[in-house]
Amino acid sequence: MRILGIESTCDETAAAVVENGSDILSNIVASQQDLHERFGGVVPELACRRHIEVMLPVIKKALSEAGTTLDGIDLIAASFAPGLIGAIMIGLSCAKALSLATGIPFIGVNHVEAHLYAALMGNANPKFPCIGVVLSGGHTSILLMEEIGRYRLIGETQDDAVGEAFDKVAKMMGLPYPGGPLIEKLAEEGDPNAYPLKIGRVKDKPFDFSLSGLKTGVLYTLKGQNKSGIAEMLTLKEKQNVAASFQRVVFEDIRQKVQKAAEDYGASTLLFGGGVTNNLALRNYLTAKMPHYNLIFPPAALTLDNAAMIAGLAYHQWQRKKQGDPFHLEPVSRLAFHLAT
Image (cartoon, rainbow, N blue to C red; front, top):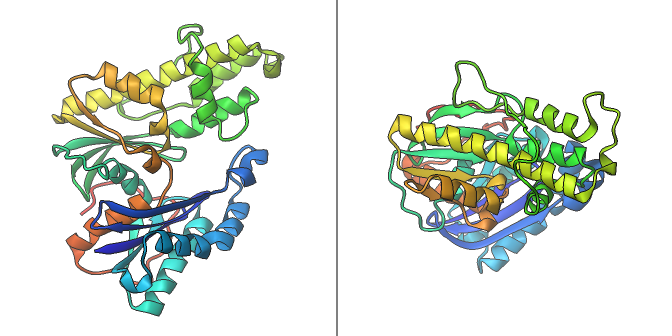
């Protein structure tokens, strides 16, 4: 079964062709980093305009690289939630239009759920139930994954997503967007114990995240309690130490919460998804700290927003439902990740 996947929830325009949920025939991603870099973050209106410009060329390229045409596609899938509402609408509308014109069934996919599924596209064989961990620029969640398509939300962020916190800390340090990879690089040469940064705890919610207080701690470290200092005057070594200290606190917070979830729910397999999981220091840290668990990370090409994970997950949704979604399926900017069936 060949599925054309379309992804446009934020600032990547992507299309892919995947066979039977795992065999990636093509995976095309058009990045908008050049467009948003000077603004220090994603500008929704500009993102939507770029999606409109490149959507059809990206789809055509995905079909071409897969050696097929729409005649060889059995299902069309697109992200319908969560994300930037205008951006989602463009990809979703395109998928519906192609479906209507060709008669190929259409199905909507939860973008965050697809991030978790990405870890399974490298022929991984997890033992269910397992703990799913989504760490991206817009989402931070811990879930009990009973099987593909069945989840229970255990914990989520109360303020910033992990990737968002990385980008904001980078901005405080005068680094360009996206800042996450730059923080990781600086941290390689820094002392992780140079600054006593602390992360917040959420009362009565041991699995929830809160990163706003940590960001404030970084701000005071960079500029002083009276905020009179200038971050740009920091030495390279100071920036390296701040980056390393910030990473250490975030990594350990993730480790503690994920390990407690695994212990409480009796899971031996941990699935990770989302752009932050592309951080090699994070992978190495968690692998070293939790040697008795089976940690499964997605292939590097599937960590960031992409359409292969959309098409891959859509295969399992089709196998479960044996029918497409109605054309009145609407884009959703926020979507609770509770038990799915």
